[in-house]
Image (cartoon, rainbow, N blue to C red; front, side):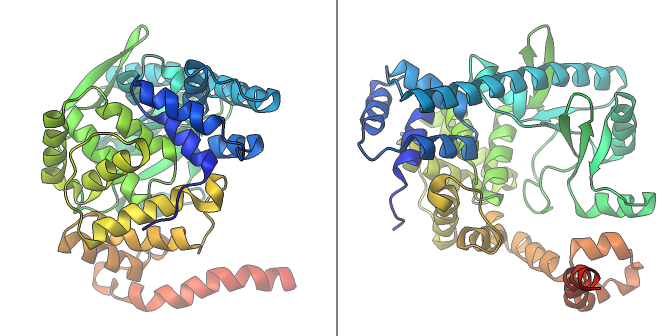
Length: 390
C-alpha cells in the first residue's frame, strides 16, 4: 500500500481529472479549502508536473480564487505555457507541410496533435518540444531538411559521422534546436528503445488532425494509446501531465471502446503499459475504466509511478540514485511483459550504449563491450576529477 499523495499533488490531480462531472468540481473546492494547503508548494507542484493551464482552468471553473500570490503565479505559468503551445503548433504545421512537400513521412507524437485530440483549446496542454517520427531510412534526409530551416543538432553533439551512424542503431531519437526561435525538436526513428516492445505497431495506421489552417499526421487511436502508455510506463509516469493526457484521451470513449484499445495495445506489444496506465487513471482520477488484475510486476510498476510522481512531496525532480530513480531503472525490465523484452534490457545494461557509440567494435568483438563496461564507466567518472585536481 502506497502512502497518501501530498495535499498539493492531490489538488493538482483533481484539477487534471477529465470531464465536467460535478464531483470533480467538488473535489477541487474541498482540497483547495484545506487549511494545510501551501500556495508556494502548490506552484512548485504545478511547475514540476507542467499542468498550469489545466489547474488554472479547473480552479476557475470550480469558482476557487487562490490567494493573490498563488493566483498570479498560476496565471503567469499558464500564460507562458499557452504562448509556447501556440509557437509549437505553428512550427509543427510548418514542419508537416515542409516534410510533405519533400516526400518524407513525418508523424507527430504527443504535443500539438495530441492537444487537438483531447482539448478544445491547444493552450490547455503545456508542451516543451516537438516530437517528430520518421522512418529510419529517412533520418539523413530529415536532418538535412531541419538544418535548412535553421535547426542545429543539440544532442548528441561532437560525434563523427561514423559515430552518429552507430548512435542511430542504439538510440531512438536525437534532439535539434532552433537557436533563434528556441524551439526543440526530438527527431525519432523508433518509438521505443526496446525492439520487443510495440513490435506489432503499424506506422501506416495514422490520422490527420486539423490545426488552424493546416494539419498534422499522428498515430491512429489504438497505436497512439499503445505508444502513450508504453512511453509513460518506461519513464515511471514521472509527470502527472502524461497520465492526465491518457485520461483525457479516454474521456469520451465507452467502456467497451477502452477495453478494445487496451486489447489492441497489448496485442501490438504494449506489454504491461496499457494496464498500468488504466490503473493509474483509476487511482489518480477515480475514472471508471475497465481494469485487469495486475501481476506482481504490474503492481511494482504502478507503485514506482506513484513514488515517482510524489517524490519530494511532488514538487521536485527525481534525483539520481533515489528510490523512485532505481524503481524506474528496474521497472523498465518489466514494461514489455515478455521474456525477450526482459532479456534485451539486461543485455543493454551489460554492454553500454555509450561504449558502442564511441568504440564501434567489429561484429566479432562485440562481447568485449561487457568486459569494458565497468572500467570505462569508472574512467569517465574519475578522469574529470583527476583533471580538476591537476
